[in-house]
Length: 146
Image 1 (cartoon, rainbow, N blue to C red):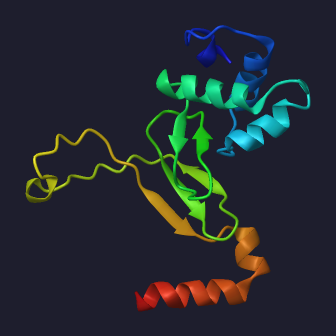
Image 2: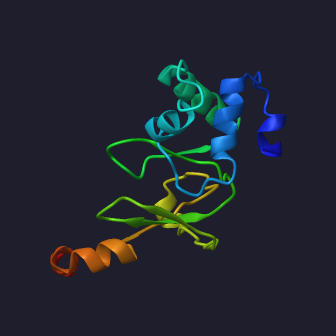
């Protein structure tokens, strides 16, 4: 919670509830998921309050906006360098706390000044792997053909 204390946002009870929900959260929630959880305590709070708070946090470096799910933006309160492992079935996202020191060859940089990278690993979580082995076998076959 200390992370959000000096971020420069007015600390309303609704925002404090959002900060509390995000603090230590490893689920990479969407704005909708945050709204559903926090509105239980604040039923009159609007979705716009959650969305605007997340936008302000993103602008101040308090959360990372993830675009790894094409259906919705997700938010990561862990703004340190890390990568992600994503289940292709249920969309579960797991932090990978390894920093890969990849060097992009000069010939491929196109005069970009590269300052960072983010790697996404895709697969099937234990629950999805166990519950739908036929789906998993089909996906693995598609990857091998590609």
